[in-house]
Amino acid sequence: MSKGLFITGTGTDIGKTYVSALIVKKLKESGVSAAYFKAVLSGNERRKDGSLVPGDALYVKMVSGIDQPLAEMCPYIYERAVSPHLASRIEGNPVRMERVLACFRSVCGKYEYITMEGSGGILCPICFDEVRIWLPDVIKACGLGCLLVADAGLGTINDVGLTAFYMKSHEIPLKGIIFNHFRPGDRMQEDNIKMCEYLTGVKVVACVKDGDRELDISEELLKSLYA
Image (cartoon, rainbow, N blue to C red):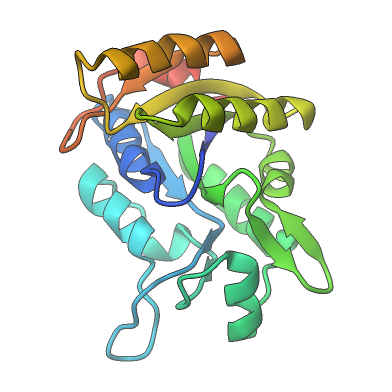
């Protein structure tokens, strides 16, 4: 039976895809069957034939070395670099939860560990037309717990705290926190770890430095985050 984990962030461009790639790479190298999934991906370039390249999925595939076909990784791909609800409206292809779940379950049927990356932060609107879908709706429908990616620097105590409090109030399990752009020995960032753990009651399970090509976490701890 497959196990899954949802990767969310304290905001847009916080490093979710970078961290997701390192996670999937770590899982693959541990010998398990690992896969990546992202329900909605906006801000993509077109190939010469007019089709869209799922940029985040391609990055994860290249870094991790997984054999999973790109076509399995992301059911909704948009060109506009805006929130998914707006991109889908502009491009006339609204997100349907049924399709997201069908594609997700298909991936779950083929791989042992599925790493699902979210769009934007925890309150990202996925569809806001005839049907209203928010990111937490997707997380709950897939039955996943979350790993929160946050910047290690100034302001992260507030960002992590607010995100964690929202998740708790909506009964979304927070399994761990990963700090990105971490500078070892930086007194403020070291203190941010302690403060975020105190606020949330959740451990910072790994810290990622700029340029890291490996995730500094044990295989056992990483796998234990998946359910």
